[in-house]
Image (cartoon, rainbow, N blue to C red; front, side, top):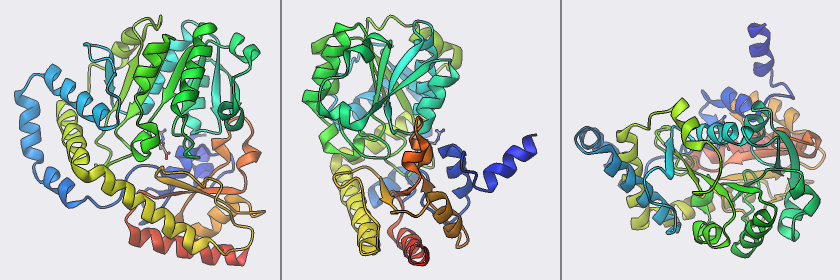
Length: 383
Ligand code: EGV
């Protein structure tokens, strides 16, 4: 049984979840599948890594409470989130944003049975909610950005969950849209939950979201993530932040799962945030922008090919393959040891909408990325 499941994943099964596809890519030098940061360290970041024993020492010596407060402050201020709640216990450090998501999902499931969720978005959000027996109602990006949400939808759910910037499309909920969403949630006593894991890449997501949420006064939760920004070999943390009146046993469920995150990781994340504030973040934006141009330039003139996310700044880029099926292109690419990510599963409600797209990771060193995209070009010319 376990054997056949593994075999199916290895064959590149249509119904693999996104992480199963990403898993297949992990040992390849030409892995353009997962959204984790795998580019080379910058000189400033290398200096921090050279000091790892000192960071460990700091983690041993100093009070966890202080180390944690400094980490949260450095990261959230870097990204413009000045009004985040800084009183103890309101930012819960987690091993990853998916762990934060599981904790939030379990907490939601104690008080409701339905959640409205953005469509498309990274599939493990849907899977973690469904895994806690929550029924999901899709919200497509166009209606989300176009105007008010349907009152009937809001009456039928206990929470609206939005990824911003969205993964994979890079679409950002602007300040005035967030305010209106929060007002509608307040009117219907619905919790507004945001996953902002990709916000580091896009300054349009750096307005103070916490100021908006707190001034409107809806019940809310935000999941933050240091994991997509810096090539720290998955040494990272997620943060689960929530309104005082959220009315869910978030802290209790957190304690069921975790005592806390390693102080060494908290110190490391603080140091990377400080480096980012000192010019590293602008440098990262230029680097990702350069890789995006490289991908578009190398593929641009192929017949039927388009880039659906013209405005995206996040570290992934979707390619629409015209009528070529994503999983077939994936299989052809694999013959050259190149691994991209087929997009069906992002469309957790209607997978066929993602059949003709691949997602390409941009947080990669430019040289292997360029080689991978050249191979993709050769493959697409044959289709
Ligand atoms: C992306 C990996 C999990 C996820 C990658 C991701 N899957 N956590 N189950 O971290 O966009 O590739 O978010």
